[in-house]
Image (cartoon, rainbow, N blue to C red; front, top):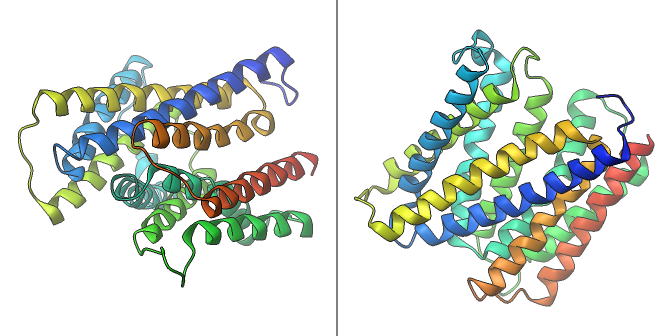
Length: 291
């Protein structure tokens, strides 16, 4: 793809990104629902194994090796560690805290990636983007409200998940280019299974899923795989700077699901913090494109 994608490609890429974010929000809904029937670790383990099998078929179908030597390279091992941490803590946050709150804090991930790229890779970030990053983190604090009534340590689990995903995205930049998106998807789903196994080893309680749990697991797997593939299509179809801002639609979908399905009622501070995070993220992406 050229550096300047046609308008139609950017439109298709943006639509794929919106579809991906809707898919991820629905995946979270199924995950939160299925934990009423089986342990969270068991749900993640089953989902991760199903996703691994799916990407293994795609990888073999494309004539690529499943166990590429680059998978054991230092950048990939670091990426995998962050992937496990992100998956583990964010899944715990979805299961144990309001979906709207967990999704709102997750939206700070691009801000952490920009800050990390400046500190670790020496990328130039001007004072305007640093100011926007600070505003975004202030939005996270509004949602968390540390030191005041209503603050819960469980909210910090979401922050840990967000930092894990940011670390994964930063490590992906250093990933060997020889690996395809299918191979990265394969290792990503395998790490999800590892995260599930860790949680299950700590909590125990695995049991045979009943028909409702199986249906929820199937829904989570279908929408999760769809969302991952839609995200890949989005990033390959349009310009990254045009398509990426549509990641924030995930917050809209999550809040709608939280209100309609789980009867959550985000308060004024949560909504204000969410608005600050999204606004600062969009501004940071816009400044990045200009730079």
